[in-house]
Length: 223
Image 1: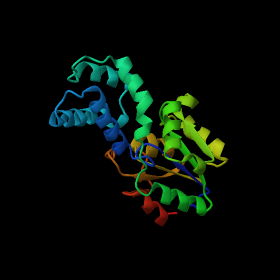
Image 2: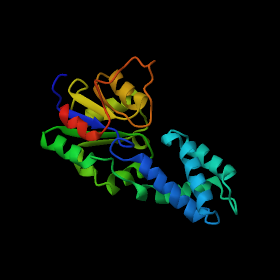
Image 3: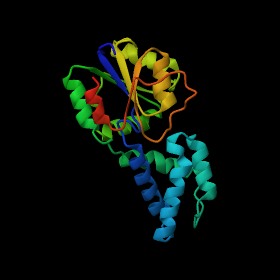
């Protein structure tokens, strides 16, 4: 691999442990809005919410409408109120991915220019970034809800590279999603590192990661 000058990271399930975050949110949601359930019933609902959420790759309005219809309410809560509860409370459950800070410190100390590219609503993603104390690491932060384009649209990576002051050839992308992170970044010419989390590799993709890691701190052995 040609030596890089910049690193671009994904946020959810790369630097933020979204699995922990959503489970924590779901547990509080059930406690607050379905408090009539027994502990066993409540846990079943939490697990059901996690499955229905599909690791965050559901349309949120559709997800909230579905919860409104299927959950065992004592008094039904409409989708708009579920959305309001989510918007108000979700970011407070944010948790860093294991080794995130150590890895970012290492990369910054090595002189790399760091950036972040994430899909999501502006206020939610900014809330996560600030709660986790990550903002100071990055020269550029691109949020799809603010930019008006989402991964894997090639223009969102090009925007991030422009804000970093780097080129695709000189930048390495690190993320967990085979399409939104690895395929998308690869199609604009970046080499990539795939952090294996919940998404299996799609063998039909015509782009492959330069390296694959199971934990973030393995990145230190690659750069």
